[in-house]
Amino acid sequence: MTSRLSFNSMTADRCSLPEVTEACAAHGIEWIGPWRHKVAEIGVDEAARRIADAGLRVSSLCRGGFFAADGADEDNRRAVEEAAALGTDALVLVCGPPATKDLPLARAEIERGIERLLPFAAEHGVRLGIEPLHPMMLGERSAIVTLGEALDIAERIGDPGVGVVIDVYHTFWDPRLAQEIARAAGRIVGYHVNDWLRETSHTLLERGMMGDGIIDLHGFSAMIEAAGYGGPIEVEILNPAIWEMPLSELVPLTVDRFERYVL
Image 1 (cartoon, rainbow, N blue to C red):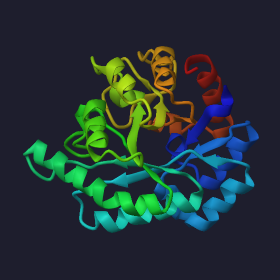
Image 2: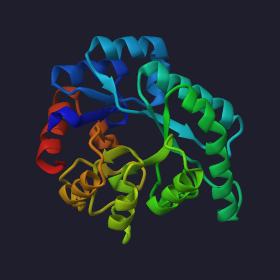
Image 3: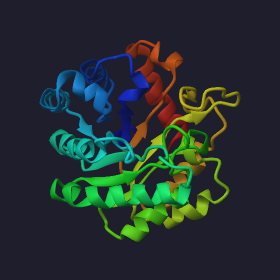
Image 4: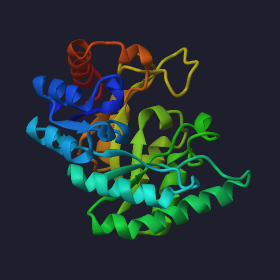
């Protein structure tokens, strides 16, 4: 089961990418999901070399998106180039907050941004994965807050190069989750796991380690499997308490919890 575990670099955000790659290799993890700011610390070529030398593969690069921001198109093209250089075919899109109070218009602008990026991504062999975020993050991080909205965009664009990234933290609450995951068959670009702690006060930075919260991870994974996804599964935990753990403790704990609670 560990062969599908991908360690997202944000789970150890206070460590460097070389430190994380070495720890993953030492504990038998085969995949890594880097964030762009960690790649930028050492440069994309050096990052690609370090990852390859450790015997790891890149499950996805996070992140592109933020389509309403100044310079978004140029930055997203750079993100595609970085993903290709790292050897991954998946770029996670966090679509950005609305630039207007007219939410349908904001979502239409995001869709147009994805359409502009798609030909460039296709040239580089990179799929675009729209990641819906929890509704509490709409104001500052994403106007796409349900899996259904993300799938609506992917279906309207109608290209296999556009799909969805499903993170349990952002989507587990959705009453239509089972129907939407089934609908996502053939469009799942990535799957992220963590947990929702029972007493959460900071929606961005209080994700839990798998098994510490209230999400039915086995049931969630079963739905993902039934939808035909058999790729790497990223453990992505944004939590300063987790970041304080030494890698010598964090990585084996992640492996243990993944094996016990995810598959």
